Length: 105
Image 1 (cartoon, rainbow, N blue to C red):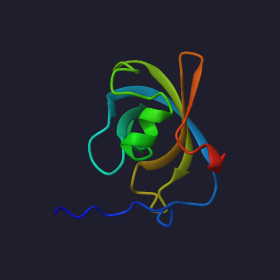
Image 2 (cartoon, one colour):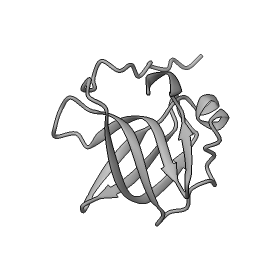
Image 3 (cartoon, rainbow, N blue to C red):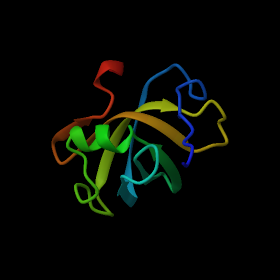
Image 4 (cartoon, helix red, strand yellow):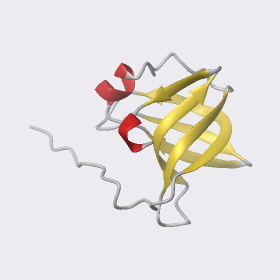
């Protein structure tokens, strides 16, 4: 059986922040966590969401947000400032809020 690593919060800063950018790679529900990529000021950020079942349950599916759309993500950035990665607790798109980790808000 394949082994999956758990992506905890330890590698991320404690401070919660928001970022707004353009989707360059839509939501993927593959892997141990859902993911997407957004461009913020010319830099592409890796956005780590909740596990696929939980992201889907929040209403965020692979076809929900098209490439080119503007989104705001809320979460905890990676502790390494050189890694453009955020573990995300919420995505806002088209007037709708997708809480993938509502207990962390």
